Amino acid sequence: MAAGKFPNLRLVHIFVTVAKHQGFANAQGELNLTVSAISNYMSELEDKLGFVLCRRGRGGFALTTKGEAFLQQSMTLLNTLENFDRYTASLRGEQSGTLNLGIIDSTITDPMLPASKAIARFSELFPLVHLNLQIKNPNALLHGILNNELDIAVGTFSLQGNSVVSHPLYREQHWLYCSDQHELFTVRHPTVAHISQMRMVTRSYWSAADLGKKGFKQSLASVESMEAQLMLILSGKYIGYLPEHYALNWVKQQRLRALLPTDYGYQAPFSLIFRRGRSKEILIRTVRDLLRNSAKNSKSRH
View 1 (tube, rainbow, N blue to C red):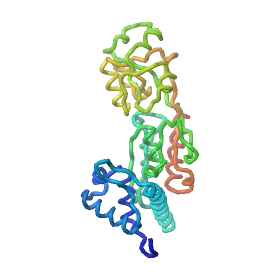
View 2: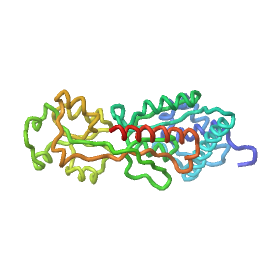
View 3: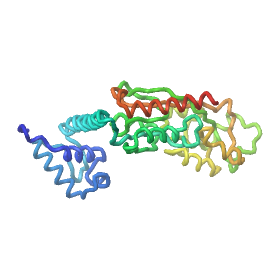
View 4: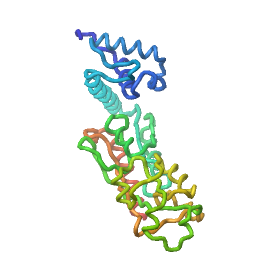
C-alpha cells in the first residue's frame, strides 16, 4: 500500500463490524447500511490495502489469513483512538464518549450489588458520557472484555486469562429449588438419592464438570438467564439453582422451596473485570471504585 493511501477510519470500522457479525447481512443493523453498500465499502478497503480480507459467497463468510491479522490491528487502532478521545476530553476537564458496562442478569434484586446507586453517582460525575449497559451471561461478558466490546463487567468468571484484571466483590448464595407444582414440594425429608434423579435445568454456560460439582450427572433443559431458569422451575417439571435474593419473593409466597440446603447450597464468587492496561482510565477507575465501595458497604450492613 503506497504512502498516503491508508484507508479512512470509516472503512476500518465497517470491516471490524462485518468481522464481528460474521457477514455483510448480519452487520446491516449496526452499520445502518444495505448489503450492497457494505460490499462496496469492503471492496474499496481491499483495493486500498492491496489484498483480500474475506471470502464471501455460497460457502459463507470467512476471513483470510491476512484478514485475521488486519482485524487484530484494526481493533487495536480503534481502541487506541477511543482511549485518545477520552484522554483529550480529560485534558479539557470533561469526559464524553461511551462507557460499555456489562452485568450478569438478575442482580436487580441483589442487596450486595446496588448497581443503580453506583450508576446514578457515575451519571452525576460524567453527565456527557453515554452509558451502554448490557445484561449478558458470564461467557459473553468475558468475551466482550477480551474483544474490547465492553469496558468493564461484573459477574462470576471461572477462566479469565492474563489479559484481564479481576477485583473480587462478594459471594452470592445459591440454593437448589423446586416449585409448589413439583412432586418434591410436599416431601418432608427428600434424600440426595431422590433429588439427584429429578429433571434438572442448568445454565447453558455450565460445563459437565460444573454440573457434576453440584451433584448431577446430566440436565434435561438449559437456559441463558435466571428468568428463564425460574420459568422452568415454576413449571413444576424441573428443579434448578437460583440466587437466594432472586428467589426470595417466590419463597415468601410459598411458590418455591429450597431442597436440602446443607447438601446443595453453593456460593458464586462475584468479581469486576476489565482489560489489563486500562486501570488508569478515569471512567474505568471511577466505575470500579463505585461498584467496589457499593459492594463493600452492602457487605458491612449484612
